[in-house]
Length: 425
Image (cartoon, rainbow, N blue to C red; front, side, top):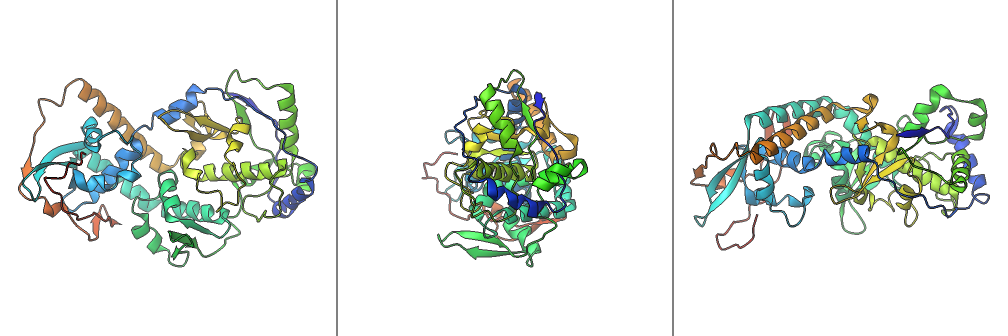
């Protein structure tokens, strides 16, 4: 990756008040209709492809390991399909059978006497899940900080639960965070009913110490006096090797980088959304949002519902295309994933950004690749065993159960499975 250093640094001292000077620019700088081409970056595409199926597999591991018998019939797992992100034309049972290094298949008899697939975990997968639970418990304060900062980016410190569910994986929150993580902090969060009749979560307390963006925090050691006075702050820029900028685009980018930086944590309701200063604020919001994620990336659709909570203008995601030196949009795995360029050296996340939970996910990813390879070689065909249980009802539970010392409360639908049901899994 070719890196461009068209930016300067300033410190945090008096920065939030200095950033108000950006408002005086809003009539001087209008949005320029600059279009920058998208250039494929193979190294950053690999960051997305290496995680293919990982979220779905880890979610299923969580569900199965939390069940009383550590196994679940396919119809209970199918109730959570919406959180897996699998292609609509892919059967859940087909997905599970792809990875015999993690998922073991047996069968149970439903109430109509029909054999139904049932899945448990391999010993290696269970051990790795225990490690994951330990890391989740050890890093509670870190996850809490990330979630609080996310709420402090919003206008009313409130988000729909659906929006949080979409970001749960990227922020490292437990799958059942609503029942295990949030209730631990009644002084900070409360469940609310939103005007649109959806359920939401509200953050109660503002913390000035948390309301400092990563860009400001990283700029403190290299502050320059002239930038401190003007309140300017620019973003690190890096382009894919071979990326070329026209002179007009380069001049616009240099001028845009010199504009005052507006903290994403302050109220900017009186900024004119048609100006470059406003766009720099939008870029700053997404820059901070991606820094809050574990891998400095998220699917583009995950932020589609954040326009109103983050007080963003219409068509706000165009900022990703207009600033390919800050964000890279990968089109791999049948989706668009926004990646923060500065967090990666080639295809590797910089060491200072590596979270302990990522090591567990990498181990799961390695198990997925190994199981897929061994299955393609036919190594599991001869050793496959099918076990039939006479009663599948014991896999149904509404209660709270513990796994590895971390309380885990997952709700499984107890609807009756009929042998006449033609739904396929």
